[in-house]
Amino acid sequence: MCDDAERQEYARSHPLRVMILALIVQGGGVRSLDPEDLRQELPKHPAVAVIEYHLRVLRDAKLLPA
Image (cartoon, rainbow, N blue to C red; front, side, top):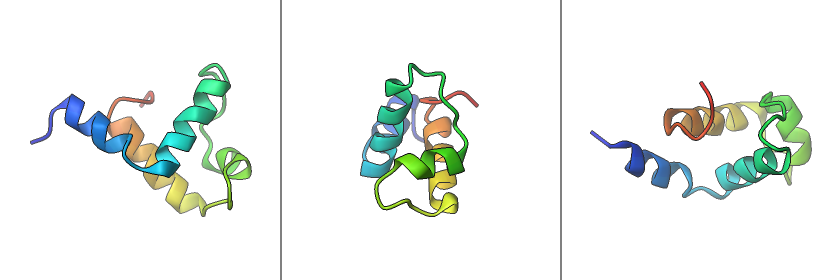
């Protein structure tokens, strides 16, 4: 079983998740976490399902609120 530090390290290992976290930080942590809203601001506009997956990984690592 992974501990929180390992989950967080894994969550930060993917470039798209790093971009998502950067967008949230730029917004002061109060921006929308809606995948469609994030999609518009990410390069190459990844599919909503892809963004949902990465948000779930970030939430599981406790880097985003549940």
